[in-house]
Image 1 (cartoon, rainbow, N blue to C red):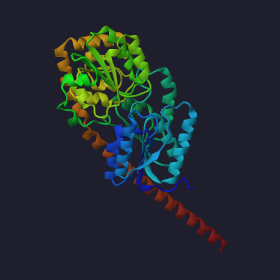
Image 2 (image 1 turned 180 degrees about the vertical axis):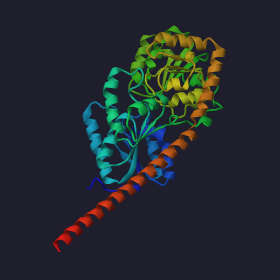
Image 3 (image 1 turned 135 degrees about the vertical axis):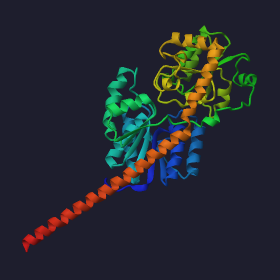
Image 4 (image 1 turned 60 degrees about the vertical axis):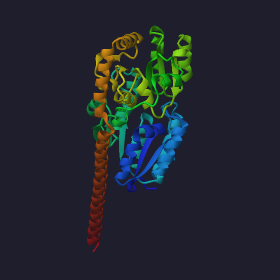
Length: 420
């Protein structure tokens, strides 16, 4: 098949490593594409690696089909090593691009985004890449800079539009990368009104009973995948040094579940730790938590933190990219590698009601600026600019083809004239 074949101007591909990224970050974008008149295809791994439950993934598939979105199983891994699954995923994606004529691709996630841009270069399909947080950042491990930065530098030459979600990544991209155009959006956005003024269905006593916590528990809450990157183990490590009434509730699923329970058991705080698994609607939990603790080692623009802030919970967060952009108060941030700093921050906030209240007010005020409506307005402009860029490119190709045809006919005419 001719690899330069013209794309279908009304067919686009939304692509990510896992279905949970489509579910959590991209449903509004899919609706935007449809509003602009596009037939949307989605390719991701619906079977493995997701941070949400299997039931949630099945629900996502039903919703997408109801929206007339074409779904494609893409066996994309979340890690670059071992290499063999990445090669297989590339071949799978290349086959998809050979079967359909996409006007352009919007891709996400480090591995999925890399494979998408390599395949798109082969089939000459324009690409929007949203970086939800580069793996190279201020304070990142040296190996991340050695491996991920050169890869992203090379791939940026194959990126028509690069979208970043925090200021640190935006500044870096504009000075060090070579994408065709670059845009900054305030994260993926949240529906702020869903969290402002939410009225809980349960009393605090009923909530504690539901999660088998003491009635007088002071609830520390974390939300996120149970992985080393989310750093929940740091909170468990300081729990024995806090009052016995302080308990730790974590909402999320992942491979570190057994390791975290084992750590809690060895520290003698197993009865004070609750791993609730994946929770679809967190508003009830946010409304009963006393303090939101977000100890991540790496983030882009964290949705869970934004939701907690919008819910009016005081927050104590790791001092990393994304978090520090949202939480400005020094007293509400700590070094994610220091249990001592975390402990001091917890004691300072839990023992000072006035500080908690000030933290709460500032959080809600900051969260208001990250409403999904503002994000979608920017994404609409990005999609419209991509649409115009593709039309201009096609028009330029037609002009080039017409000029080449004209020159060819001219050459034939000169040869004929010479013969006669």
